[in-house]
Length: 314
Image (cartoon, rainbow, N blue to C red; front, side, top):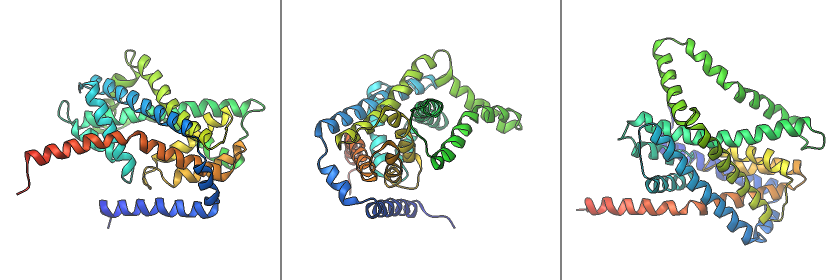
């Protein structure tokens, strides 16, 4: 018997709290707290500004993708929906409920499938940008002497992951050998992906958007590290920070809390920083991200008041 949605949320909250508690005890949480108290507000403000820019650019990217999938919308509407989606993602367990709601609310112009594809492709584009930055950095620092030294335990994880991700296009190609219904579904998915992201008209704009928004996320984390007095080398920023950010995609916690901090504490020593600094920087980034998406609560409140006005309680 599976868990209900409410039970699953409670489990995810429990996982986040448990991981953070264990990290607090294992990585000298008191030292991390002392580091956070000395955080430079200037760097924190810069991180919030960069994450705000990331949200505005991501909303524009979503608007462009949705438009190519026959879902036209104004930029203002895209920003409002994106802020609301980000706020829900950062507030509720799983990290995807805001995206699901965004797709559902935009289902009318072209149907729920196209709306879901637009949201999925938009998220995929950003993660692909982060992955591309990581992949290039990993290859360069591996073959170039004096680059970032990758421990054996980390290489045994990242190298297979890199090969699998690079092999995905070939896996999709073999999908054309599937029987009728599955092949048609794959053809439809590929056609939508080509029209919205990979086509000659879309790619010249989508590629720089993907790299820019990815860079915003990575730089914001770097700014949080600088705020607590930890200066990471460029190779570590471009190679290790993407791995930390990827942990936010694992839907077993609330917005990555706990997993992100654990990976940051494990990876910071590779760059010559302390585990406590990794924990503090990750906590600072989580708070910065939440602060940057706080405007998303406004459309939620406006929508709720509108519903109450149209259907007042008896």
